[in-house]
Image (tube, rainbow, N blue to C red; front, side, top):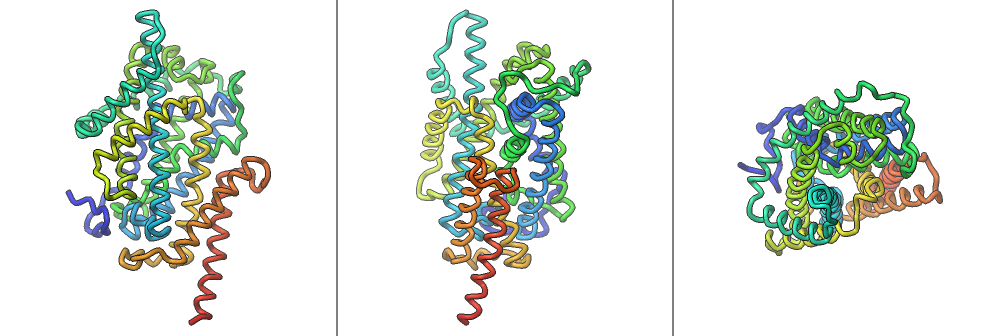
Length: 421
């Protein structure tokens, strides 16, 4: 029952990398995974979207292995690793951003939930629903379940994953008449290949940052590779490609319309409602943990109530209509963090493990890490605006900038320290 939240996992405790990969891979089978494939496929057509899925999956697997390897070597949770790399203040900022991203996912799932309820009421009673009332009621229910019944929802969610896997298999079997040369859907907001890759990165980039939470239990380097490749490259690419093909065959990017057109019927309504509800319980719980890591003086139930309120507010801004922008934003913010992981552990420390008692206070090196991370985010934003074109892959522009800056400035900092001594 020991969770090793603030201490290193003993080397005698280990889990297979494949098992870790399947746990992470289950997230690809949630409804937002279907939407990612539908949005990118509709914008680019099948062949180009598959290229984006593969490139993004390869990058996620690489970044996931790097951050996962850091977790495997140090045996520390993501929160403690981030504190060692970015300092207490930097870790607090990152935790708040992680919480905000989880609440963003909460808002997207809430939009899905309310849209399905509205469609059901329209079909059954022929009347429009009050979206605000629906989202408010759902927010109260989800917050209550998170406070009092999370363990039940956790068990139910374990049964949802096989259903979603069966759904993906069913969709794949209905694609016999699919034309592999299908082009973009007319009227769909366009994406460039680089933007699509950033969207794919954004779909799992928070999971990449949090990989040490899982790989600290890995038993070998090979296990860390499996834990990254299985979810981020194999399973997610499969889900995205199948959903993209389904959307292009039906010529729609609306997940409910696609499922109904493929003959899933009333199961589509039930599936989206249950998936959205259960996923949001987990999102709210995880967001509460991230906030609690910063505001340790607050009680957990206070934090869950606040997070539930914020998530419901985010749902009201219709994030589902800005889904690709949301994923792009996640890639821009979190990808440079992986760059700092690389330099700090492999170059600066030369793979020497982190010791928690080495960092009682924020050091100059940790302040430098935060500044280089922020610089990487700014470069990605400028690249997206066309004011600083580098590689053309905006999230990678920021990551590479962070790597170069942190490597050079930390070496200069080490040289100055040596001269002073």
